[in-house]
Length: 159
Image (cartoon, rainbow, N blue to C red; front, top):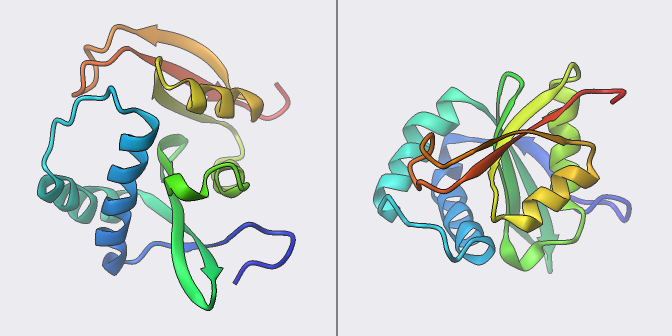
């Protein structure tokens, strides 16, 4: 598992990751964005992760070892050059896991990445800006299910 220099080990997601990734997704969103509308049930979120995200995007999982137990600490979902999702277990934030996942996304899409995050998600915005992403567009929320204003970010090497 992780060495002293790495906060986690990355691996490709498997079909049997759907349930723990759903729990992590829901917990992370609730902790980071308590204001966000819940537009789907837990069961619908599990079905979406199982049948859409896992088979339709490149999903990488970050694992840590704690007391001999392996724990899923975070994951990312990449569709080409679009970073669809990056979520960290709320109890493991600020330990370098998000940076490790983001570095993997940049490596997988070396010509550049784009993503959306909610405008009110100041933690995510600061994280992406620290990692070289630039805000390129602001939307009123009509493009997402939550109807929450969002911001489009882009990263390109050398910028």
